[in-house]
Amino acid sequence: MEIFEAVILGLVQGLTEFFPVSSTAHLILFPWFFGWGGELDTLSFDVALHGGTLFALIAYFWKDWKNLLVKDHKMLMLVIIGTIPGGIAGLLLQKWVEHALRSPLIIVFTLVGVGFIMLLAEKKGEQTRATDGGVTLKDAVIIGFAQAVALIPGVSRSGSTITAGLFRGLTRETATRFSFLLSTPIIAGATVLHAVKVIKHHESMDMSLVGAGFVAAAVSGFFAIGFLMNYLRKHPLHNFVYYRFALAAVVLIAWLLHS
Image 1: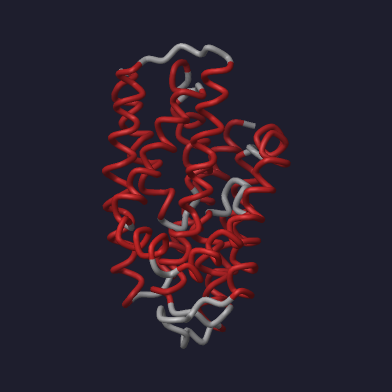
Image 2: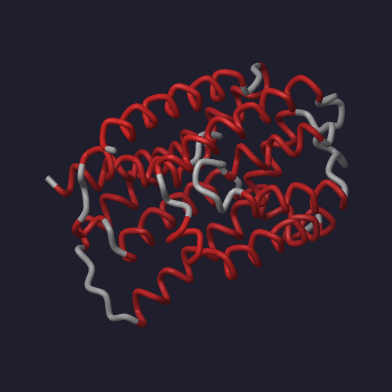
């Protein structure tokens, strides 16, 4: 049964890490709804899920990263600068967030609040600045701070960074591509930090669960990236916002019933 749960959580992680609906919220809510725990609530399983989504990012954007490392050093520097706010926030606030902000009620408010901001970005953003030379230093800093805010469950890393890019006048495709490039070092850092904790605490691993979670997150994440990149070329963020509102309503009802 835990293998099935591991696969489901891996699929959820892979899809919601990249869709603007908050992976953290879903990974909190699924075990809460269904009462899952045990081996799935361990650092080693967290490493598997983060590792899977990291693999998906590198597999999808390996040509982009090759270009950044070999040729486009300006964009590489922008990615590094944009990563700094999220990295600092993660190091300083991660433990506090994990203990203080994991309430389903908080997730309800962030799902709805960020949803309205996403709608506003679609309405107000000019979306005139395309991929070639589109991202500036100011963009990178602002989008980087938006990524730091995504530490709060229910915000969504892709949702906050894409939205910030739209407010800055970037096209959806440009904002989404930069969002995913920016998320790669952050997810890599989180994976390494969790792995170090696993080694430090000598935590045992159920390799079948770890493997199932990793593969499910990697496969679903790869297809989620491709889908979103293609979808946002032609469509606005509205459907994801409506999903956020619907999820918030379900969580609120469930929370009231449990209270």
